[in-house]
Image 1: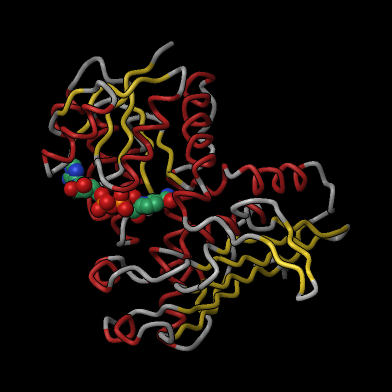
Image 2: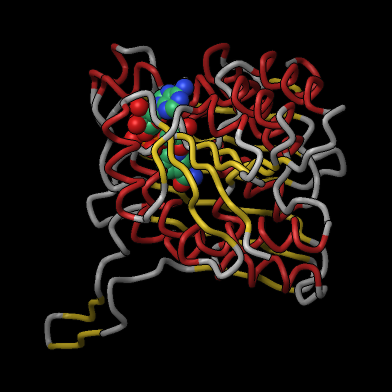
Length: 332
Ligand SMILES: NC(=O)c1ccc[n+]([C@@H]2O[C@H](COP(=O)([O-])OP(=O)(O)OC[C@H]3O[C@@H](n4cnc5c(N)ncnc54)[C@H](O)[C@@H]3O)[C@@H](O)[C@H]2O)c1
């Protein structure tokens, strides 16, 4: 079956999704909306789709599913409107900047029965997916210590930082979900420290650019997440899981696989530059997983509940960093 898709939001990530929707044999990009009408028009034209308003997309009887790639502060409203209109939904992370609003969104969409997936694209990265499969196969026994490194190559403009909700909600949210993905459980308590040492302007805006969070699980297991907004050698994305029977490590994807050895030393290419380069395969696999779940009537592989959990973890980490003490998940 060829599903007709409406894409809401024609920005940076909307353009990526337009490509993956069109490239998939089971979906076609039918319509694109954006509050900046010109953005929608340009993107729609590239794929032979129509530019429409978001309301018209949600009301259109032929559209089966929508992909929400608008600014974060619109996600909860659009998820609710789309599911009430009978559309299946894939929405970008985070669900909202407000945990309370995200929880209300979860409650308000229960009745519709429409499938809702949140875009935790890293779950679909071939490397992390292979780690998950190895864990599920019991290859390293039980996961006991997860270690996640996630450094951006360079900080975004301070204008972005100001509306981002802060590093924990905007950036570490992916890593909180990765910890949940690898551990198969939610932590009970989070301790976070953070500083603004990359760019003092980020500190002046009330945010941090360098942070570590430690997650404690009820059975004593531990996860550690390290974030920085600056790694001069590129996008550093590594995950390590120590289990009772061994270790799994996913290394960076490099620009090429050449290793140069000379009298001066041994060197290799840099990691792929940023998320568009590193996770292109993951975005395509994420979309395939969404379509497959609709096709097979199975549960979504990253749910709205997962989205709310990651946001609760971000809230706990933000509070912990500000208060200088561990914060329990049941406090937020
Ligand atoms: N999963 C990932 O790797 C990833 C990467 C980047 C961004 N994101 C998320 O995707 C979302 C969009 O980020 P972006 O970088 O593409 O931002 P962007 O600003 O480039 O694009 C957002 C677009 O949405 C439009 N828009 C805003 N409100 C709208 C509304 N009510 N209806 C229709 N269009 C509307 C804007 O005009 C803009 O064109 C954010 O929530 C962000 O957190 C996820």
